[in-house]
Image (cartoon, rainbow, N blue to C red; front, side):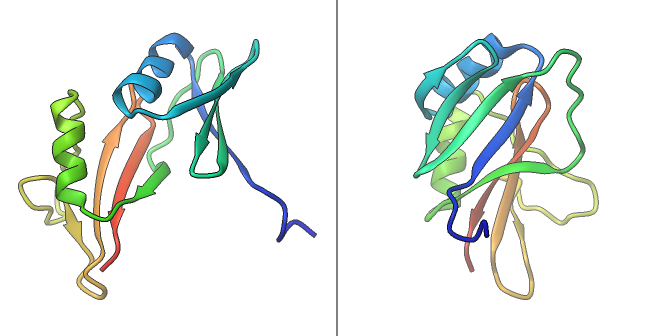
Length: 125
């Protein structure tokens, strides 16, 4: 029933203006609308709603990620805008914060938005 329906994803934020600045200015996402509850973005044809939730507490796992052609270049560009990449103890990440899946050579790096939501970049192996 839903296999052909367009998805909509949601990222939650207690401080919508701060989160909006991050997603719009830092990440460079294109805003497509706004209502009293959320700011909408176009993510390569998928709608993302950055939704205000009072008292939002981020979960420990990745909520949104992007596939990139060159993870080192994407990290460099985001780092230049003040984004810090997470290093997790025991993961064996490199100096940029990239973890490489030994089974596929897929490379992943994680960072957080101002709310603490965990985001990721992935370069297919």
